[in-house]
Image (cartoon, rainbow, N blue to C red):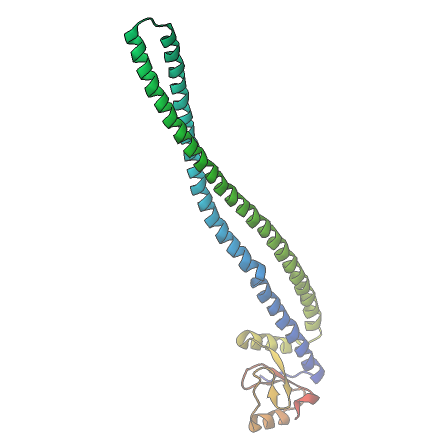
Length: 246
């Protein structure tokens, strides 16, 4: 069925298409904000960091447990040394004294070994605390960057949404001035081919960016000014103006 509309109404379709094109660009921009990609990267990095922190924190707790065990053993040995030293001072038996001296020597060797082990574990513990502190610092940096990116994302989305709302209002007002069948044709062609209307400029379709054949141009020239014509290449409505070169 042939749709007819005044040339001025057909030209308004170009404004409608500009609105729809920009609206599509806004939706694409929202889906491809640079902050989204970086936020996804930070989320992945955060997951990996949490796994590392769990491992390193576990190692830290193991060292603390080991140090606590050694410290407890040291206290036991110190208590036994103090007890045996006291017994040695109070014994009058040569045999008992020799036994106590032998045991004290063994306890002091044990004490020395434990203190060496304690020092080694303390050094390892200090190193591990540094590792965990470094991961905590890294985590803080990720959280700070995440908050910054989220704020930037929200601001960008708000600006795009505001523009989209303005475009929607302009579109509604524009559509209200156009014939219903013209709008329906535009919407139908746009849903099918991705573009509803384009300017015919010097024999070239703005919908396909292809020069029309001589026969197609002849058919368009022969069509009345109020007849809505379609691009044989892209399927969109071809809007004819003084720039069309017909």
